[in-house]
Image 1: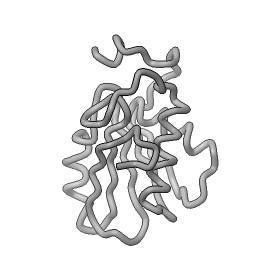
Image 2 (image 1 turned 45 degrees about the vertical axis):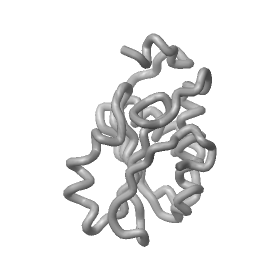
Image 3 (image 1 turned 135 degrees about the vertical axis):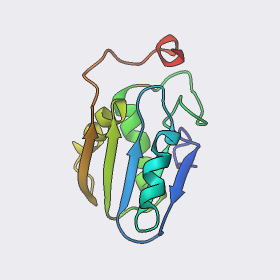
Length: 132
């Protein structure tokens, strides 16, 4: 569980030491998106993939669906796992969240990988859109 309580499901695999790869899923996805990638990497790399709030097995609060809110969740995850060296890997919406978090220039962030990052969209993301 992540410290702020909004992300309650996190897949954490591989060595507990060394740089981490933090995988952020697409809109409507979950940590399961990264299972195949993590299968290839977890023998040598620390891999962390949350279900972002409102998706997968994490809770769906009434509010809190702005990119800033998701970036706050990533900050809580980094703190919870005491990550001192990490890379963000974001797909689509996860890419937008990764950029928002990286713009804060957090200590320990060593790189960002964006896979088809999503363009700007109106915020917050409504319940009907999340349910699609």
